[in-house]
Structures are given as C-alpha cells and as structure tokens.
Image (cartoon, rainbow, N blue to C red):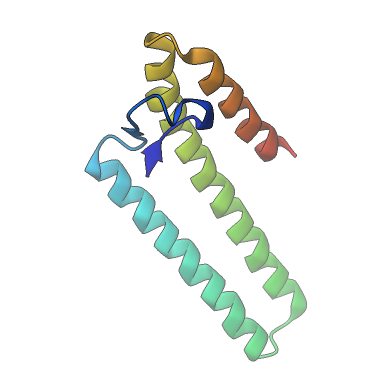
Length: 106
C-alpha cells in the first residue's frame, strides 16, 4: 500500500500508507477474516440456508469492510495527508481525502 495523491503522483515520491509492518500485518489478517466470511456466505447459498441467516452474514461482512476502510482512512490521514500538509502540499491531499470520506458517507 502506497500513499499518493493523484495530483501529486508525478511530482513526489510515494510514502507508505501503513508505516509499521505490525499495522500492515493486522490489516492483512483482518482482510483474511473478511474473505473467509465471504466464502462462508457462498457455502450458505450452496447449502440453501435460510435467507435471513445469509442476509445477517452479508450485513456482518459489510460492517467488517466498513471498519477496515475506516482503519485505512485513519492511517492515510495520520500518515499521507499529514505529511502532505507539513510539506506544503496539503490542499490536494485533503481534497482527495474528502472525496474518499464522501464515498463512505454515501
């Protein structure tokens, strides 16, 4: 995962969005759990499980993805955006962050 603002990509060297390997490992582990949940939904469909049970699992996956996305967003804000602001390139980074935040709010 790399940090870059599209408007700044050609001008700046990219920065890692997850600075510590521990954070990256935790996010990767979290994603693996979500993948397992999605596979479980597929098995539930194959087994003709009760619709409400499947929908409950779909909701759980959606919540887990939202939580993962928010964690990544937090890393991005504290890392990439903060560095861009300090270096004087904050406006494009903030604009890009706001675009992503709006997607989460929709």
